[in-house]
Image 1 (tube, helix red, strand yellow):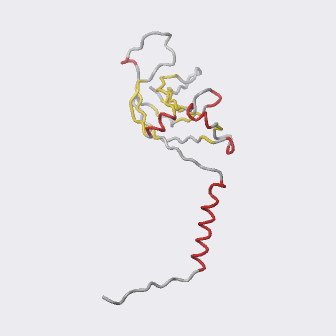
Image 2 (spheres, rainbow, N blue to C red):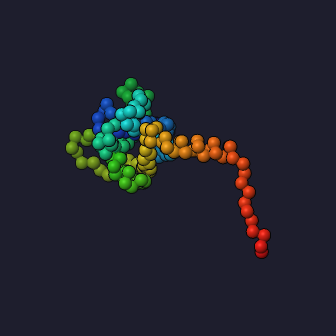
Image 3 (cartoon, helix red, strand yellow):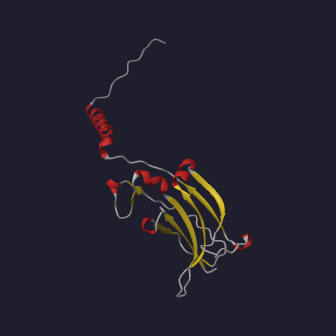
Length: 168
């Protein structure tokens, strides 16, 4: 095998709504190990940018992670599809938090022919799903005001002396 490129797609409910991430190419190996971390950000409609997905609240459960493995080719025909791993819904990943398992790579389309297990490659996935919620800035106003007020009080006050009891 000359080189291998796995591709992560997220979210996956249509080609116009996916974001592809690629690992570095591993050359001249039959057992590539990537050990790479990818971050994907899903945003709400108010904070949409071109680098992020604009997702309605009810669509979050439809988002999925998919992994495909490709052999990078120098030929004019392009890269060769080696197989794909399973898709994972964010709803399932969110409940578990961590997912670590081995999978047989499945062919894209084999014309309905049975596939022999010993002809399939395998892929180990270790997925850690973390969900962070960022609220609009007005939700943070009371905390910000409290921090600013307490900071001003500390700067403007003199150190307090503690009363001690000299009785032993």
